[in-house]
Image 1: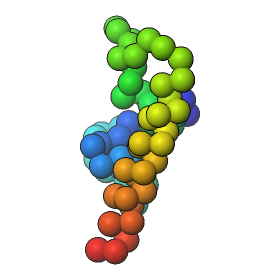
Image 2 (image 1 turned 60 degrees about the horizontal axis):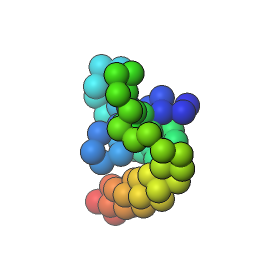
Image 3 (image 1 turned 120 degrees about the vertical axis):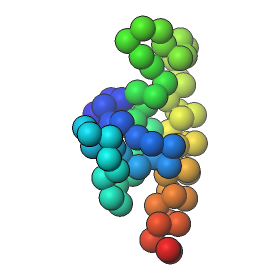
Length: 70
């Protein structure tokens, strides 16, 4: 799903109506659409997904762990 999943700032996957899909988080290339748009790319150099994968993976994991721990 290269960039295909829409997420919120907690990296929770959003449904088509904008509501949160409970207990489902996305990171890396699956939600990298936040880096690009059909009008102007946010970034224009190769390899940017690597940094986003590490950063978003850590943040999504922390949010998921916090949700489980209550």
